[in-house]
Length: 212
Image (cartoon, rainbow, N blue to C red; front, side, top):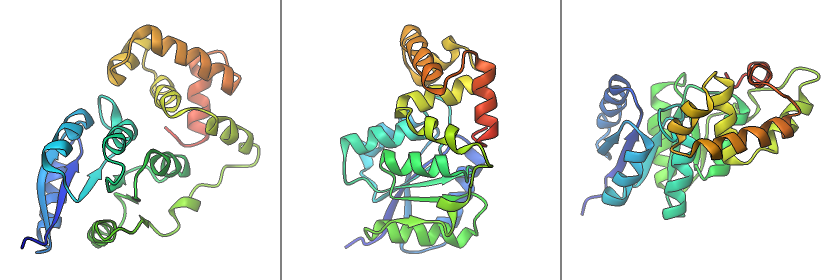
């Protein structure tokens, strides 16, 4: 009987995936069964491979990691997804867990932590890098903005992040595979919730809260 933990790797950088694959392959009990460079592809591969654990980056072209998590979990509520991201800000940890991820570690962590996290999540446990959820404490005066940001829906947060990066409504629509009018409506809702009027103000909030 094959008792190996079957892993799907999701990261848009081939070199990074190769490094993860070599690291995981050094453990006899873990096998990388598939890789994806975009979450759209990961959703399809998940259906085909039914891996035990998905190791997923957040910052990728297309629908991105947060939406990828939501789509996989919508299809399989028992999906075990580990986020492995460069982002160590609390807002990303909270959003990933809310989307359905079972664990979160950063790419700055020790290599052995990835192996430990995969094993823990495969075993039905959660795994959050020590201290990560409390890693970001907003400066004095920013708690109000954090609260406003928490009021954004998952899709609004995705749109907010892209607009704050400087993408146009058309570009954001292409990235998220949404209609331009839909993104424009999200943009209006986001600005109203955050009490701003311009994309530059969105960027300032994202910078202040270390989302960019």
